[in-house]
Image (cartoon, rainbow, N blue to C red; front, side, top):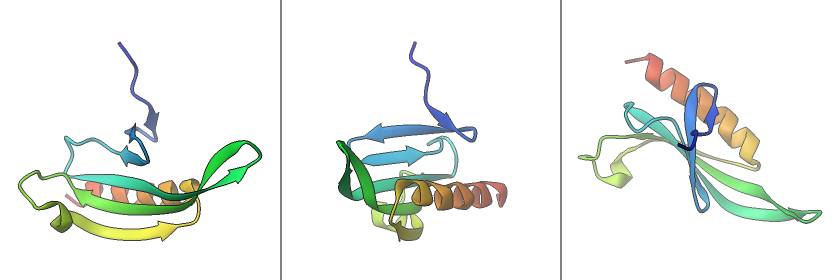
Length: 93
């Protein structure tokens, strides 16, 4: 059985250029979407990343699920803000 990749106690799942951070069993999840990349040596590195704090409720229309959004110029700064948003959202239940 494959082990799920985790960061700071929450799962990370990737589908193409979208990374989900958190569990769909929780009320909130972070969606990171890589919008643009640049070449660094021979590697593609994210240079524009959209971050969204979303509700996981499937009964809410997808555009109404977004609670917060931002754009960052690196994957790490995007994940950084996403971690803070998710922790705050999940602890305020």
